[in-house]
Length: 254
Image (cartoon, rainbow, N blue to C red):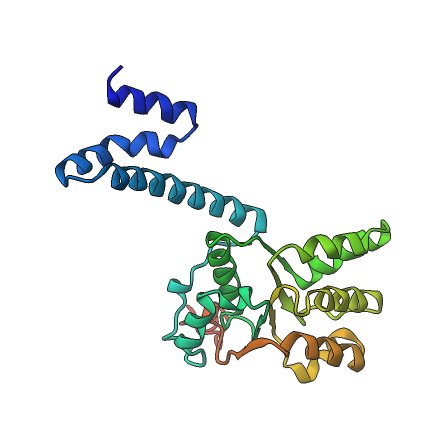
């Protein structure tokens, strides 16, 4: 067999479809640029590693269950002046995940909290980190089901192996009794062990209202912000940008 047929056969046997698709072009470049055998081999392996990382990243994105696809590059800093680009870029480098620290986004609805949370989560997935995303209410439902089944600690240990947990929409629905305790256990179990991104429409001073207990709220905030970047977003909702809400539809129309 020729060298080209040998390579095609070996790529199929090793189940390297990306390399199979590109090995011909790589061989042409190798001949044209007088690559050494080592250079050609390295280029082939780099192509396959890149393809596998990309495919793995997309699988992690799907497993995280994000409600939408967002990117840091699409965030509208012109509309949201209260967020510094350098701080977002620093978070985008994902060093906070390696450091097992947190990020907290506080601000009114529509100011970009969820966009930033999702975008950082997707970037983490593509960089090789497992991520789990849910709203605060969904996390409480999940932990409540585990508690009722007698496996809460198992669930917390399993989540502890996920490098980044994202908790969205804290404060939209007040927690009652056991729900607040379950939420506290989730945050506490990750303290200095794994990272959390959390977003809330309530300032920390109002978390006692959210959790129905000032002591629980204070203990949670203490663990959450000890190693965290806290970003306060301000301004009007991006979703209402350019819309005149002062006029009732049809009012004054003829």
